[in-house]
Structure formats: C-alpha cells, structure tokens
Length: 110
Image (cartoon, rainbow, N blue to C red):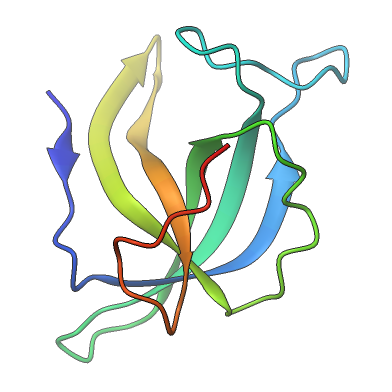
C-alpha cells in the first residue's frame, strides 16, 4: 500500500535523468506507455532536520532534462517500501511537477 506525502513536504528538483534499462533504452510506464524519468530531489524537512536526497519516478513524454535546478517540485508524491531478494528500501513516484512559486495544482503533465 502506497502512502501520499503531505503537500507541505518541501521537495525541490535538482536533477533529471531518463530511467533506462540495462540496454540504455528509456523505460516506459506500464499503464500509459509514457517515458519514465528519475527526478533527483532535495527534501528539506519542515522540522529543521537534515536535508536528504530522494530519487522520484515521474512518467511523461515531454523532454524534461532542461528543468532549471530548484525551480520545480514534484506534486502528489507517493512512497512505499519494496523488497526484492536481499534488496529493500523505499520507492517514490509523483503525479506531476509544478513551479516552486506556483500553486500545487499547476502541473506540467504530458
């Protein structure tokens, strides 16, 4: 079961990379066939805790590699635990991206 993060969680995108398979081909989202991207995001906790990096998956057919750092944030972020063999951790995905100065309802979805 995935959990939605609170809307006031402070994430800012600092890097964008295509999510490629072992052959260098960009992966596709299973349901929509949109390209998958890895958003490297800086999370700054509201409680003043230590900032951390998170890799967030985003599906869109737009080329978003030129997003300026710290100007956009992920919107509607989901998180859940995964376990595959001896590997486990958290996965993150988002439904959209928005300008940091814009309202959370402003999305750049393809």
